[in-house]
Length: 124
Image (tube, rainbow, N blue to C red; front, side, top):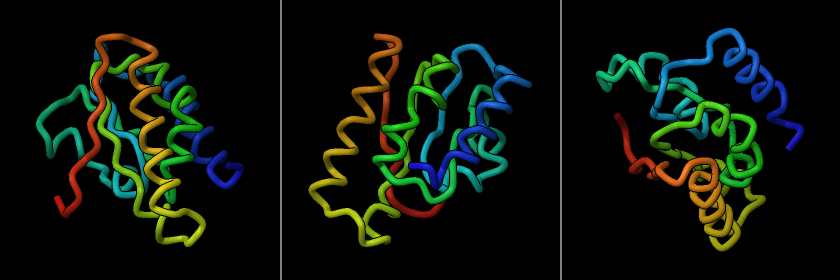
């Protein structure tokens, strides 16, 4: 998981500088999220926080969830990840499914009212 550490630390520094809105909607996952610079404007909700980090896998999302997402105490979490799991050849569909199921479980643990929803596949 060291591969992602620099970007995760950057997200932590950004949160320290700006703790974000109350009751945010967290978009979390791979570069498809990270590179969406105008996500809050595009979706018309200033409470959206972009918590993507490039190249992330579902396992990395589950691993870093407590450091990246939980401190925001989001009311909703949208996860987009999985392309890199299969694309890099290190994961199988079965191991990716296992990682995917652990990420929503993490979303429920910080706040019982939190919901998580994987983003649908496709362009925006």
